[in-house]
Amino acid sequence: MTTRLEMKNMTKMYGSFIANDTISLSLKAGEVHAVVGENGAGKTTLMRMLYGMERPTSGEIFIDGKRVAFTNPNDAIKNRIGMVHQHFMLFPDFTAAENIVIGHEPKQAGFFNRKKATELVQELVETYQIPVRPNAKTANCSIGEQQRIEILKVLYQGADIIILDEPSAVLTPIEVKGLLKTIRQLADQGKSIILITHKLREVMEVADSITVLRNGKVTGNVTKEQTSVDELAKLMVGRELHDLTERVQMNGEAILEIKNVTVQEKDNKPLLDDISLNVNRGEIVGIAGVSGNGQSELLQVISGLRSVKKGSIHLDGKDMTNQSVLSIRDAGLSHIPEDRYLWGAAKQATVEETGLMGYHKKPQYRSYSFLRKAPFRKLVNSWIEKFEIKAGSLEEKAGNLSGGNLQKLIVARELGHETPILIAAEPTRGVDIGAMEYIHEALIEKRNKGEAVLLVSSELSEIMALSDRILVMYEGEIAGEMDRQNATEEAISVLMAGGNQHESKN
Image (cartoon, rainbow, N blue to C red; front, side):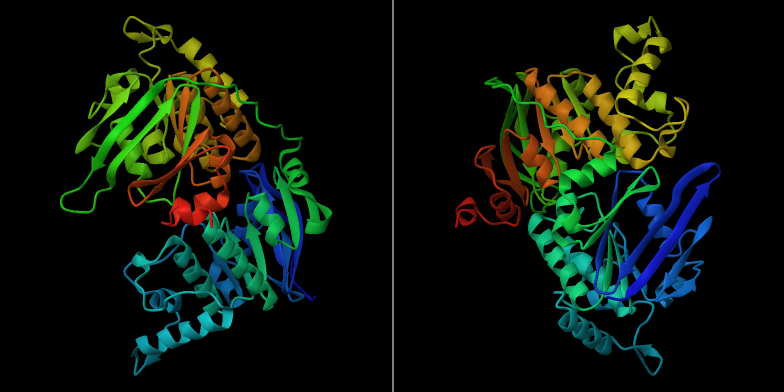
């Protein structure tokens, strides 16, 4: 195979900080090359330089042996490089075809030729065997189909090199299988793929070669045959990962009881439809499901952020239905929210102030009407050390932290409350493998102490690794329940897609 891309000694500095330190990689025609690394390892910066979004401090890029320099993404596109971003850039009210051809629309007599656009997109669908409905409004497409629209968009622009940034982050397991099949098909048709991901099992399934980054440097450059998931993880983290702490057998009584809860807005279909569940002391209950199937509304109802139309919520025997957030937290609930910026922090607050949220009433941190800052600062500094939170100081704005570091601060804060029950929504979103390992350990330890965790995660591997029982939500209802011993990825995937437990066994 001929070499299509070479990046040589790529360095990017922001002041004295070195984001990328003399990184080199090459990409052949028809190859899938995975770039893996922890949060902040330098993956995104490297790809931003390749796509013309950042100018390198030093280093060279060669396309088909010719040296190139990009000042913006248009330069990259002209050199047949396309990028599918983690957060899709589609117009929801446009059709798939309109989104794909935008910027390069076929015209007739000076006007947009919608029929020709549909024909061109249908040709792409057939050529690359990527299932998309050209005339479907994007807002009505599944997340998986929206991603395929993005891929067809870069193919329509003529891309031979396609960068995929965390492409499976929002997909169901079934959709992930379809994505990996698409990636392989594109490579077999001569396209060159750069896959940015932290999901090492997917890397081992689809990649031909792998570059591992840690702290802005290359720690490994291997083929799939030369490595394993464990070896890649070690190269990413710099140490061996540990097995999770064993579970202590628990048979606790219910700490959280939800009975026949319905949430409905005006005359629309219920967001939650007669939901009942319980979480016992000494138990982690995982909720799986494609985003948008009622998980968010369920957590908002439990934590007091949304009202219940009918049904009841009891926490430690107390009726907390439609109570205030403060009352519910005082009753023994802590909450790692799914959106760290919207619910978990105030961007203009300092690191110290973000950590203080919920602790300002605790007697050990108060003296009459004044806060006792010294003991609290000691606590926050212990979190920073334990979770390896990268912050310039306690006075740094929370909004200046990377997403992963802010997530670690919120997780540390909520675990520190040591409440009888914790809602953990996407607890490891955006964090690196080392921090993920620590968070998982902390959740198991909480469970083993006789406390309870309600876990919601889009990472099915996380749900299966941590949960004692798994509930699957689909269109605002509990589609099925299974215990740890009987749960399989296939069975959960079927329920997530709207099937039933009987189907999953066939």
